Each structure stands twice: as structure tokens, then as C-alpha cells.
View 1: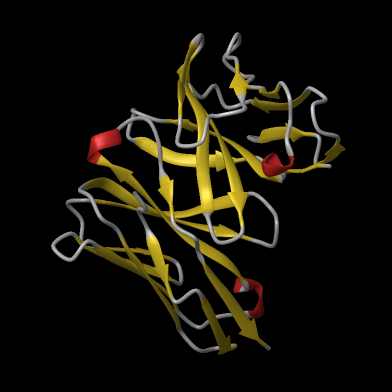
View 2 (view 1 turned 120 degrees about the horizontal axis):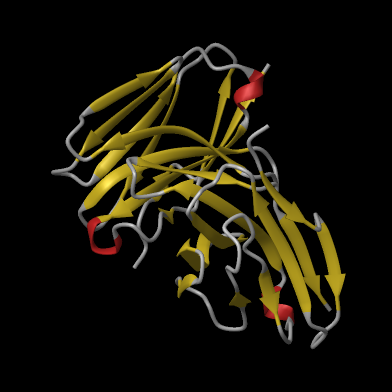
Length: 113
Length: 114
């Protein structure tokens, strides 16, 4: 089954604006992670939030997790052109704990200078 | 520098010609995994390994083989490639199970099977 579906599929904003991406998932999780991918390159880990956490910050990133709604959001504040990339959420599901992260299809973020 | 190294970066081959994509990590990670990335389908796991000589199927294992004879290496083998295996492949590693589940990814291998 598909875990980690991001919304929107594509987002275009101006430099300096905030960007918000959402992720929904279907099953109970141990943690949820966000990754960034520059065009065709390897994914880079941004932030991990555990199922017992509700919010986490890292620099200009803010992640929230609502386990009752099975959803998460990634907020990038004061965006820069260099933030242009695809962003993926990934879930470590309880049922497959210790074996995999399941990725969504990603949100393509474009930050216009 | 801590890294996951995949080779080659680009590969064009023909149907049926066996190939191997290599993956090596220098972080002493127990966990290693292969993913393929296709437009509209996101990343799908092919195989994973929890430690030396321990491998298991992911979501899309058909047509692929792996081996884990050494901790640092986790090659992906396509015994008889077919055009539907044309994809972007990523190897990843992690200290999974020790409270550090984040994945470190290689730069990817773009495979085209003609």
C-alpha cells in the first residue's frame, strides 16, 4: 500500500516566501522523515520526527506530526532559490519496523529569485 | 568523508546482458538497501540487508539479485535485464535499529536497457 503521499505535487513560490508541504500516510509509524533531492541526485536527509513528537525544528525547517490524522507537514521559512528541489516524506511503519522506509512521490518545489 | 559510493553513474545496456551496479559505504553501517525511482511512482525498495549474509526482499525484487559478503559492499545484480528495468537506482545505508534510522544515499545510477 502507498505510504507517504505528498501534497501538493508541485509548488512554485517567490524567494523569501514560506513553503509548506504536506504528507499523509496510512498505517501506524515509528517515525517520519523528510528528504530533499536535487534533480536526479541522491536524497539527503533533512529531519526525523518520532511518533511521540508533535513538532521539530532544524534551522529554517519546521516539521509537525499529527498521528491522529496520519499526516505531517514540512515548512521551509524564508525560502531561497537554492531550496529548489524535490521533497519526499518517508515513513518507518510499525508493521515493517527495522526493514524499510516507504517513500511518497514527492513535492517539486521551485523558488523563483 | 562519510559516503555511499555507487558505480557506474550512467549505464546503457541491451536486453539480456548481465550487469552489476556496485555500492560501497565507509560508515560501518549494518543496514543497506537498494531503491529504484520512477516518475509518478516515487522510490520503491528492491532489496535490503540488515547485516553481512542477511538479505531480504523489498517491494519490487523481481529480476534483481543482491549479495552481502562484506559489511561495506552491497552490489545489485541484474542477471537478464529487460527494458522495464530502465530506471534511476539508489543505494542507501544506515545505522538502522540503533536509534539512527536516517538513510544515507549514493548519487544514483541511471540505467537504460535497450
